Amino acid sequence: MASARVRPPWMEKPSAATQTAKTVVLVLLTVVMLAPFVYVIAVSFSSPQDVREGGLILFPANPTLAAYRAVLGGSSVVGRSLLVSLGVTFVGTTLSMAMTVLMAYGLSRTREVPGSRFVLILVLGTLLFGAGIIPNFLLVKQLGLLDTYASLILPGVINAFNLVVIRNFFMEIPTELYDSARMDGANELQILVRIVLPLSKAVIAVIALFYAVAYWNEFFNALLYLNDTAKWPVQLVLRQFVLEGSPLADAVRQQANAHPPPAQTVQMAIVVLATAPILVVYPFVQKYFTKGVLTGAVKG
Image (cartoon, rainbow, N blue to C red; front, side):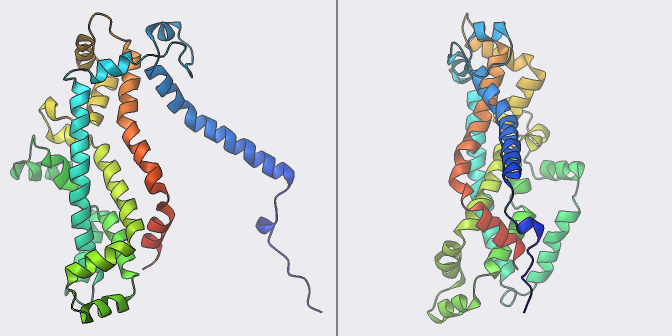
């Protein structure tokens, strides 16, 4: 008689004490991660009296929108920088997705595109070897992109990692679909638009979010390539205001008439405005994360 199969310890149902310990740890981790966000949001809506009383503010006793009115009122520096970030994010993400998808499709057709493997090796090489800050700056300068919004988009228009993920996803699509489409008279662009992209919604959504987050958080290229402060994105304004303070703080105070809100509430309002768009978009794309990233990165 065959002996009963012994299950490994990690496959056994955890005891009540273990489940309780896991719950407590997860609750503590959740509180630790959410507390800073709650504090930032609460302070941004706090009145001067709440701030003067000090202490840990998790819920404003006298909520007010004064900080947001000061930040976004009139032709404010922050309001203009938000428009710059929105424009760069929209244009950059659209352009990056178009170029990445087209290049990934070409590199995934190794039989039809001669030299695609060699180009792929060159792309992978950029993951290991970077040009560095000074060569990149000189290149942008020689191209005449200094002090232009294009300097925030073109240097990173195609991310090698994202390109490889999409290529691997495309290579998992059965070749029979391509062959049948060609037999029906479809050209490569029609195959890409009508067959490949509808089957790749998950990875397209995830990579688009990656690009959007990268462009929205863009501040280092802006610091290097933009001398005109009127063209700064919100992340660079946030850095300038929160870390260095005075120049933009004075501007905000001047726009906030005779009763300016405390500098701390203005800082937190800028942090909320700089973070909110990505937090709003993320839940709509989250459902594609597991399928999009794992399928594109592991298979192929």
